Image 1 (spheres, chains in turn purple, yellow):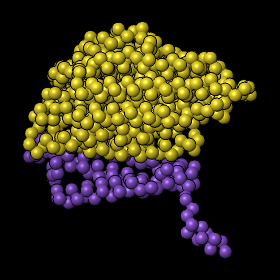
Image 2: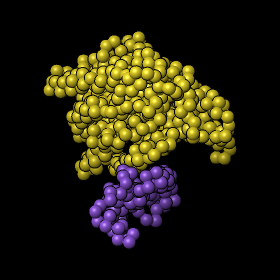
Image 3: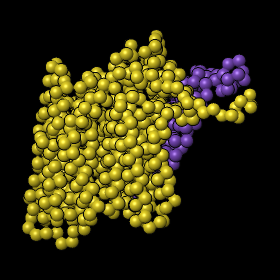
Length: 122
Length: 512
């Protein structure tokens, strides 16, 4: 279970960081979302992985740590709100700059795309 | 257990909630209530300062849980100093905003008050995860405030700011998880007990967590590799918001001062002074970078935004060296520089409003209205910021220079700080002489009217630097006592033994 869990966190974080470094806002939003999933799982694991244990003392022979679960809950709520805000902001960026480049740059019209436009206009 | 500790959090919270429901009330009423809230918050901060100046720690345990099991608020001299600093700054920014900058968004006052609440939680909390929550509260309010006033020019810096801070939050959570997985606690006092006991393979885990935490605080404080988001974002924000943000970078510095000497201090065994040898060169490079940026600035607000980075570098250098005198000097300079930089943001906005299309660009333009008033304010701000006598910036820098023992670090610090101060002076002289003296003939036809609230709040905030000079004695005594308190960890750790007052509930006996 530990190995699977670690691979899941690793995969989520790697893809999150990769997408975060993209130049368009949509992949960046996706990247931050994946990153926050990875972080939430990581926080969860900081209380040690165990199955069949309740976070209440006295109900079973051993108990699981309730604190990381509370932390994850807080992190999920905050992460959700932030993602919603970021989506709105990205849409605003798209509307303001008519482009979803993270620097708000207009598309550089390269020679190739000009030719393409001319062809399509004919 | 005194209930005053929760006041600086509850007052802006309740005031902010009231504002949420008053979005359609007349703007005069909204402004009055909002400013009344800020005044009350200042009063509560001053009360806490009076409480804290006896040098003891006061603990407020939520739900009466014995620390480290519950979340605690801890009041000491440092927290009280930061609270008063923020409340004074918040009050003047708020009065300035009520002069017209708050129009156009019905929830401006809500966001402003929630921002103040987030700052106050960050200063008072004694729990690492609670600090994360405080950061999120103040950040989400700041996202809204940064975008306030509209305009396409704010979207891109705003987007960068939000994405960077979200990535920073993710790092914060990872480092909190790493530290928790080894120590099993997030209470700062308890961490100070548990960290020195960490041994073996766990050591590297805590070390990685601690270093990542430092990266997060460096992002908030805008230390060099992580400072490039700041000038654009601050220069484009509305003036009162930019002025309030002058304290945002100081939150990062506060977090470093609060956590590193306590948890990774001299007593932390193998993890003693974690990351501090990285911080000193970074602080100097940050300072140099800020000076270069200030010299290259093409408008006043960008110039002041780079001044924020200069002051971050100046503050961190003595803090990284870790001496008690250095810490005391840094805290003195922190008060001075925060108010000065905020005042300069406000002055820059006033100048921009009086120059028509030239705005705050450093170019020759028709003579502005209210030139004498504005140029005197700019002069006072520039003298205080570049650290010339007789204003408070000079005393702050002098204390920092004096605090270093003769060594290689001393040569570096003196060199960079003095040359940097001189070049900053050149940047301000150049900007000031072009903006105020090099005029083309004639006046601008239709200047924007300047109302009293804006003029008075800017004037007073600028003149606070003189107040610091007058009160330099008591203030430096206070910062010295603060540094002493911060270096004596044992008292902070003793808050774990605070006896909790449990009210005798007659029902408890019956149930049993």
